[in-house]
Image 1 (tube, rainbow, N blue to C red):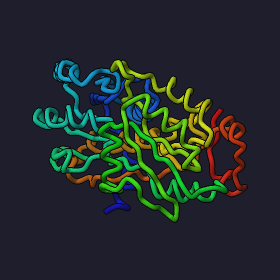
Image 2: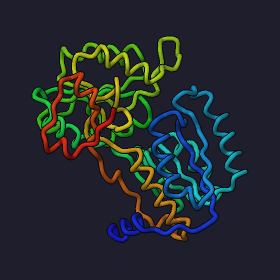
Image 3: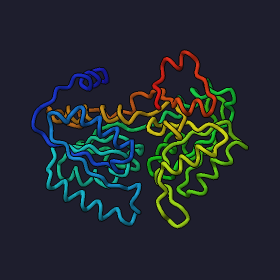
Length: 321
């Protein structure tokens, strides 16, 4: 069955004249969203009408979400899509039940929670890709890249996406050991706590690996722009900062790592949607986990931290900036 599905993903033909709505948990200026939306459009955009709607939940306060959801529901009613693509946990939580109640098939991507958090995952109109950071593969990779590799700080915002990812892989454990390296996992939405964890990391850790840092707020509950946070972290950190996601690798950002690709997730979601548009029922399409990670490195980050990759890893890596 898996082989058959992969064949469909690679070669699924497109039917004509359908309408697709993409509902982002976040917003178009967020690189993760921009990358997967571009991938969806590259697969479906030439033959179908694509509408992109933003829930904007990283920047809006939670008290403002219901009004935004009502606006999105009205837009969906006007668009009348043949299939909806939902990006990330918040969009799934806020929109999936409403969509299936309207008999609209749902393809999701970037969802970290399972059926316990998202019961609608079990609905016959729902399929998609469960996003899973490559925790084990990433740490195993960094043990090969770094000479000092005994202790890692895993630093994330305290968003539903990160909580779900960590809880599924590690359970309640926040000081696990992977491949001989000790991890300390810190999830926080407090700007000062997040930054001080970076500034003081060299006292206890050999490197930092970041997840998302896009729901962080300051002491006055003001949204902390992610680029500003990472720029300050980059300039003041005394140990290298790696990433689980390729979108956080670049100039004055993460140095690199074995990462999840937003573009690949978007391509896969679009191909699943294409199968539905061609008449396949969603419950005939098995849900899957992130198919593959890739090595991504920042040239400027490597120079900044005086990091050199082996010829083998270098030959397998994509480089930015």
